[in-house]
Length: 278
Image (cartoon, rainbow, N blue to C red; front, side, top):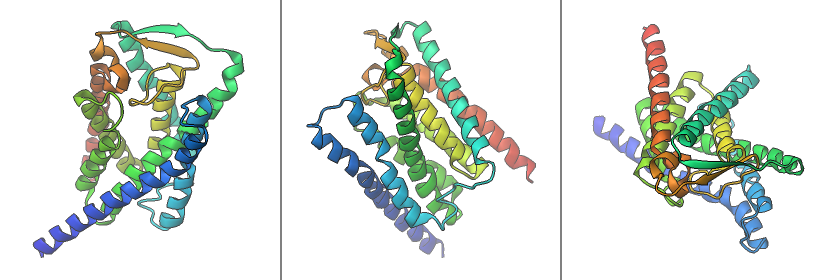
C-alpha cells in the first residue's frame, strides 16, 4: 500500500511539473506576440502588455479548475478585505526592505515622478495585479491545490515553493541569495494561503511587492527591467549585499533577512493557530 501511495505521489508531482510548464508557456504567448510586433523593444507599452495579457492564462485556468476549490481558491465572502489588507502589507514590507537598502548605501535615489506618467503608473498597477495573481494561482493555487486534494500539505508547501524559485532561475543576476529570498517568500505565501484558504491575500501581497519594487521605488523586479516612475534607485557598485545587483532587492542580503523574519512571524502564527485547534 505504501509503495502504491509513493508511486501515486511521484506521478502526481511529475504531472504537476509538466502542467506548470504548460501554463507558463500559455502565459507568455500573448506577450511574446506583442513583443515580436514591437520588434523586441522593451518599452513601457510592451511591458504593460506582457503583464496584462497573462489574464489570458488566468481565464483558461478558470475554465479548467473553477470546480476545484483547492485550486481556484477565490471565495466571494469578504474578498475585498483580504485583498486590500494584503496589498497594504505588501507595500509596507517592501518599503521597509528598500529603505534599509538605501540606509546601507545600496542605492542612490532620484525623484523622477511626472504627472503625465500617472496613466502609466495605473496601467502598471493593473498589470502587476494580473501578473502576480497568475503566479499565485499557478503556484499556491494549481500546484498546492493538486497536492492538498491528496491531503499532502507538507509536500504542497515544499514543492510549490521550489517551483516558484525555479521559475526565476533564468532571470538576470540570479544568485544563491536570490534562491534563499524566493524560497522564504514562497514558503511565507504558502503558509498564508493554507491559513486563509484563499488566494486573495497572497495575490495582492505579491502584486504590491512587485509594483512597489519596480514602479514606485524604481529597482529591478527579480532580474527583469525596472519601470521606474516615482523614484529611480541607482545601484551603487560593490554594494551587492545591500542592493542585489542586477537582480534587484530580492537578490540582496537585506531582502533575505526581511523575508526570513516574515517567514518566522507567519510560521509562528500558523503553528500557534494549528496548536489551538487540538
